[in-house]
Image (cartoon, rainbow over all chains, first blue to last red; front, side, top):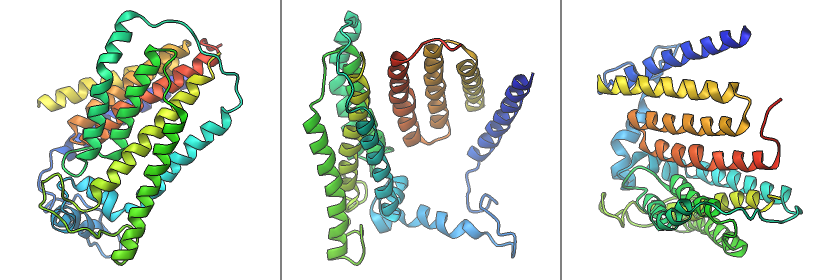
Length: 242
Length: 81
């Protein structure tokens, strides 16, 4: 009985939040609406300055068309470094936990459609992932989605062929190289500009591939890092199958 | 109007898949229902104009997480008591 009551409450809450979402999505002028958080003490619109600054000034300050990417890599770059560290720690934990396990592969063959289809799909999955993280400053996406698309391409191959493995050494090399490139770019910002992860390359024309200063470089590094980490996690989980 | 109808269909599908994932005794179909729920939620993100979140949700929630769960079920039991 309690279960059904909980389910009913969840449904009501979900429908309510969907209604709110649809209402929010129909707003178009963010300037005139009371969309922002109101300060309860003096009644001013407390958060108004930061989002409107991001919306208006991102293109001039960073040269990126995609404001989300500019926030993630430029304005909140140190936060992204922490996020990458969290992912690295979890991949290391999986490796620690599953190291000394009896390695024997399951030899059951997948069916023909999965085998041939995954061979056909893998290059396109890799290309799509690379496109997503190289064009992170122009189109939606970035390092994390691109890396996870690449990892799901490798996952498809692992599902289709029981004997398919990415070499452990190349995974760890690409992962550590990408992580060091991220930190080195940050240190170069400290060297040539004033602070860690600050832009030191001239901003190009907004809208071109070679623009938006250090965003493409950092996102390429993050894409390689996330892709190799997620594929190594999936591969570790697959190896221990008895 | 069209978007509202699509959003309601998506919401109902997501709720049904989530309740099935909680209630069923078969852990494998529970994992698959969870993958369906997150795939449907990624379409919801696309409707709400957040395509980058939609890409991440579709590839991690529906792809990699489901694979991790399926590998874990393969090492333990499939049926819940």
